[in-house]
Length: 182
Length: 204
Image (cartoon, rainbow over all chains, first blue to last red; front, side):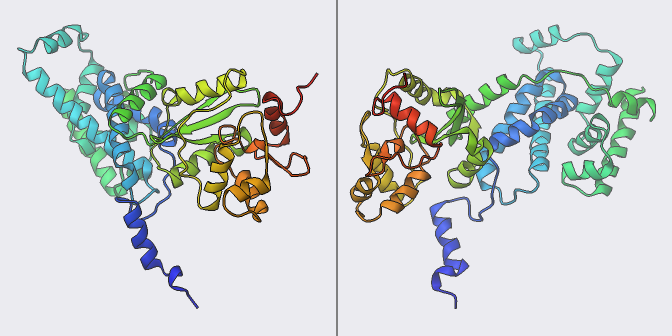
């Protein structure tokens, strides 16, 4: 016969009080494990998404945001896709910021930054076009071609269906062909 | 693969500076109060040690045979998953341990975080922490000081799972008949520490 102590209800409630914000106990690995396992690939993802200049900062922002939310995660099974989603948001923020900066040429810091930018090559043109793709299309095209992943894996890393991954890649390619081969 | 897809497979390259990322991430996390468990490893005469600190104090000292992964996983489970490699946050602990092994320090004056210890074990280890450098006590004696004079065996278990060896000196607890008893890091290490402290004669 079950003793009152063995019931799940009261125990759960107690742990809720003891650890606010962590209502369901999931076993999360030490955060350093995520940094060690994924820093390299997220860095590559961010370089392809926004260019080498902002990638270091975006990577740091990605891990910092992840660290903020980490103890409240309710699911420890999709940590990689979760990190990629955060990185995608940080990439989008960085692209928006750089567009805003370029628009304001009265800013001295920015005119200096533009001055040191090397002249555009055909590849610069391509990666600039990648940068301004809609975020999901940009991520999908980076996973598919930079990481050379099958659509099933693209879908896994993005946390979307395989069909959605496929659609995002083909929409991205259509747009890139239009933008780059002008 | 067509030309566009081929070019997409060759993105700009830039190496990741892992140490710079680690240092900046640690600094920002510390500033925002997001670094709950900071750890580092250090060399000692009895092998590499892992030390982990929280905002409250030293929470863990581990020997290599425990395996760093299980040690860090336990910290993530029982203290906080916000665990980061952050040597700069463990400076005081590492300096104290270096000085101790050099014979320049007798009392670790470090704040302790007892988060990994529960119940009777806490009392046993707190009693153990009061045994001075160069001295020893017995399992029965620490059990008595922890409030249960007949619980020598339970005290032994508590000492055997001491999460903060060396600093909480469980090596200073021996059998009443003078034999050394066990040690979480192996008997060789217990002997080494007792020789270092002058309780056992130094090897010729």
